[in-house]
Image (cartoon, rainbow, N blue to C red; front, side, top):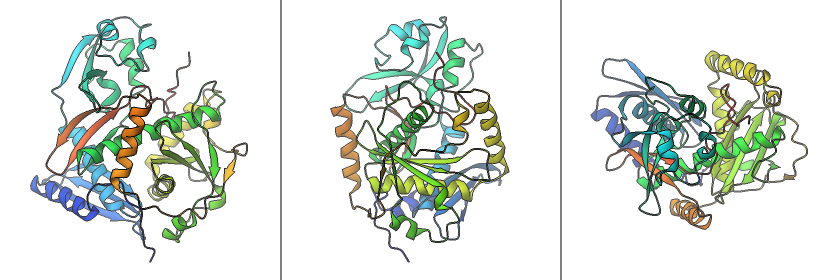
Length: 387
């Protein structure tokens, strides 16, 4: 059996993390059922209450897929059923735009000046590096936000950009922050890759193709994925981490299947993207197929976006041979320190809010002003401004 050596970017032992989360679920009479693939590299966890009523499902991938699935299920459940922020306020749009509580790097500041004034609900976020706090429109950062009685044009604009990215859980505060930040960077760079692909005038990142490390394939010898139809693309991010996207031409969907990962380990970034692709194929079902049809129909309705349905032909990108790349043994503290150094070096701000915490379970939202965390072309939405 293949021995896996790469840290999972978790601060404490994986088995201890799993015990902490299962003990908490049992304490509150929340039942869980686990399903795994034959090789254990893909897992799903379904949560239900003490009446047997379905709550939510989480999916995990990779060597520690089960603990990942538990955390994803917990995140979904807390967001949908438990989390109600007391640290919110309602402000008029014009008041927020000119206040010091709007971060100066907020992407939407200039665009929102074109909209009529009106009330919006804001959530308070805290800086990781200083004592400043900022207000962020709730619709941007809470996928289960409450709908206002009167929906303004500004609200509708921001709603199109809403995303669950940036929400993350962990056994410690630092662990949750690292996971949330990596997810934000991942979504941002997937969007930048899309911009490159459709010849958008402005994008960031220097992208190149890579070959998949042979040691990753050794972990999944039973995979049915045709490697000849897979393209791996990488880039170094603004925060010094590595971004990897896996793209698979497949007959099971009208959309080319795609996945991505970010890490301060080049190997781990590739591994995360690869196993997310494996997870997508493993869990592909009629519901996902219908969503892909809707997305394809939408993208095909906009000429500039139609190329994103079938991502192919990245031959113009340079290629690097990484088949011999091996796992590294960097600790959690290496990853977390690299993130903090990059934030300070780039003069960026990492903002957060804590939605839930116990002694050994944390659930946070991370927001990095200036990263285009909402510019994701996915699920039938065109979220790069047309103007």
